[in-house]
Amino acid sequence: MSHLCPNCQSDRVGVRNYGKKLGGTVGTLSGAILAARGARTGALLGAPAGPLGIVAGGFAGIVLSGISGGIVGGSTGISLGNLLDNKVLNNYKCLSCGYSFSTPNEGHPDSEYLPRDYHDEIE
Figure 1: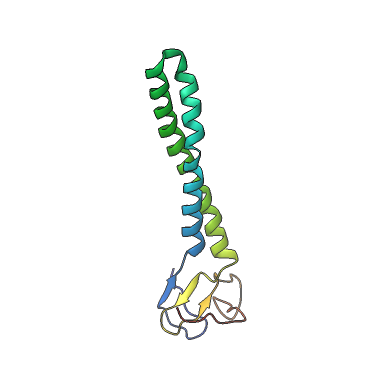
Figure 2: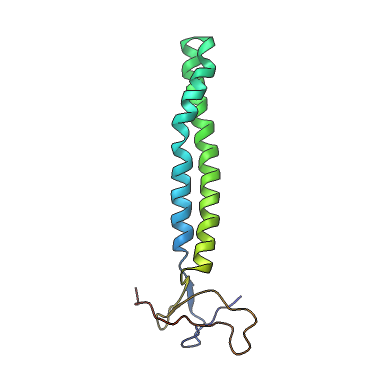
């Protein structure tokens, strides 16, 4: 789908995705931080096997909880960031005139897009 700038009608429109990028990063890091808790749980489960079981269980706990926590946290953060981009932030920016605008307003009879009441500075 080709987006048109509501200010100058140019088709040179870029997507920022700031919320999606930040949400994915924060979510992945938050999920991976849970690896410490997984290491402790793995070590406790490996304790009956002795010192080698503690080390192996702790390592397995770090890997499994870090990977699964990172994946779940990252996907949740990306979903929330995408929602933020599309509903709150001006996610589209015209590369010709620098005007920033939000998602298309479907069903509007005059234009594919309704501009916001303000302009962002050219970055």
